[in-house]
Each structure stands twice: as C-alpha cells, then as structure tokens.
Image (cartoon, rainbow, N blue to C red; front, side, top):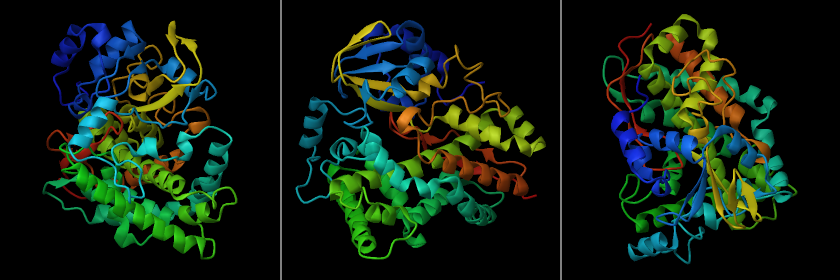
Length: 440
C-alpha cells in the first residue's frame, strides 16, 4: 500500500542516486509531492546525523532517527530554541526575496514577513526561565478542566458542520470540515467573534506561505496581510488589558503577572505560535485521518466495526500524519553528537516526520494501524519542556469529530489525491476532494 501520491519507486531511485553529502530533505517541493520518504529512509540508514551546507536554507544538521530526536528534544541546555524553531532561509535566499519585493516594512508590527519565527520572540522559541512563565500563563486554557468545559461545545459544532455537508456530491473536506472546526475552536480560545474565525485560518496560512506557491502571490501581499494580522491582535490586546480579566488566551497574556509587561513583538510572536499551533496542526490531522483511512480501507472497516478504537486511531493519525515535519534548535556549545562534531551556533533540525517512521523503533511504521499497540509512542507533539501545550485539545477535537462522523456516515470517499502544502515545516493539505454517498 503506497502512503502517498508519488511513485515511491521513482522517488527512492532519485533519493539513492544523489551523493549522500548532497542529500537535502528540507525541500518544500519534496513535501508537496509527498516524495520525501525515501530521502529520510536513506538518511536513517546511512547518515542519521547528516550535515547539509547552506543553500536556500542555512546550513544545518538533520536528525532523523527516533531516539536521536528524543535526545535532542529533551536536552534544552545543549540545544536551544531561543533563536526560533523553523529552519531559516539563507542570506542568499533572503537577498533574492528582497529583490522580489520581500523586504520588511518599517511600520509593520512584524519585523520580517519572510521569516516571522526568527524575528519575533515566542515562548516555544525561548529557554527557561522565561519560557516556563509564559507557557504557564496560557496553560489553563487547555487544562483538563478547561477541555472538559469545551468538549460539549466542540461536539455541538462538529455535529452541525457534519449535518451541513452535501450528500452525493463532491466537496472539499479541508475547507468544509477541517478548517471550519479548528477555526471555531481557535476563535473561542482567543475570545474573538465567530464571524472572524476564518481570518485566523487565512492568517495562519499567510504566515507560512511562500509567494508563488499558493496562499499569496507576492511578498508585498504577504507583508500587507501580516500587517492586518498584527493590527487586529494589537487592538485585542488594548481591549483586554483595559478590561476585566476573562478566560481567553489574549486576556490571560494581558493580565498575567509575568506577561502583561511584554512588548508588542513578544506578544505578536506568541499570537503566531498560538494561531499556528491551534490551527494548522489539528486541521491537517483531521484531513490526514480521512486520507489515511481511504488509503488503508481495511483499517476503515475495522474502525467502523469498533468505534471504541477511535482514541487509538487518533494517536495513530497524529503519528502517521506528523502535522509539523520538523523543529529546529541551535547548539549552545561545541558538542559531539552521534559521532559528528557540531559547533556552537549550528542549526540542528529534528525531523519528527522521519522519527515517526523509524523502523528500528516502530513496527511497520509506514502502515496506518488504528489499533496499534502503544499508539501514543510518537514524536509529533515533541518532548521535554517544549512538548506541545495544546496536545490534549488536538486529540479531543479529532476524537470528537470521528465520534460524530461514525454516527452519521458509513463512508467518506476520497475522490482524488489531495493538493498538499508547499512547506518543509507544515505537513498538510490545501484541498481534499471527497464524496459522502449517504447518511445513516
């Protein structure tokens, strides 16, 4: 069973034909074509701590095995996230972007629309102690008690979305279901009107978009929309900081003892983090579940026959999909790792998407198995101090939507291969055409 749209035989031949030192998995086109799997397979086998010199991205080490990724992720003293979590473009790539009209605007609330992660502080891109106090400020929103309060609302919304879907005609699952449910939840978390929810979806896409590859047409357009995004949330801050505390994320930051004095760049950095973390990951996992169940119809039959497998299926989907392909760190000092010598300041990229397919740790890792033993044994949420703060909310949304799906539909049919995101960071879907033959 192939797990993608690409001819994996051809992709494997291409990956093994390249000299090992020239192999570079950080190519967005590989991810858009779902053709990166053989590249990671070869690196895990032949060069699990792999150096890539500067190209479109800065020079970096690729960590591709499960246990090596765990070792980096749980050692924040040696591998710092203080300089951002995504792989930055090289100086040459930045110069090219600026020549194409991508220079930062001096009056924008964002320092750099080309690489917003790098220009803005956010708690996932901080080391202790600052990381700890900022994370603690927003954690109550996604605590077990908070999720228990949200679950009935999420279930009601999921049911309404599913009841509105057309039967017997093609539609885009990403737009009608995945984006819609996650946007509703994120709008509630931010405390903004539901009529603005799809603006959150749009801004999340714009942050990661590369002009010419969907999303935005030019750097000028991206800069303009980033300005609108920042202005919207600066207005929210001013409203919340001057009002009574409420339970939404913006109010928590505005009134938290350790966060109410943060500057606008720090605040907007955390807004980006919470927007992408609350939107891209869950929506692409919801879409990924439909895709996976269609690619593995025996597992779909197994799930229909036994809905008690939904929690296990949720964890398996999060592993198999891996909605964020990588996280980056910087070496805090010279260090030997995996037999290779890293220098202070080197980029170290943990390829979660590869670790989740490591055949030495996970049995039949390319297969999608809804009743997989130890299904939560995956890397998608990260480990250590930066483990995803909203991981339980992501699991909750995916569980609830499938509980409601199985009440209504026996089948959701994938009509064609989806259009995937042009990104080596967000591993997702732009569109996915499906058909529901009938309601129960």
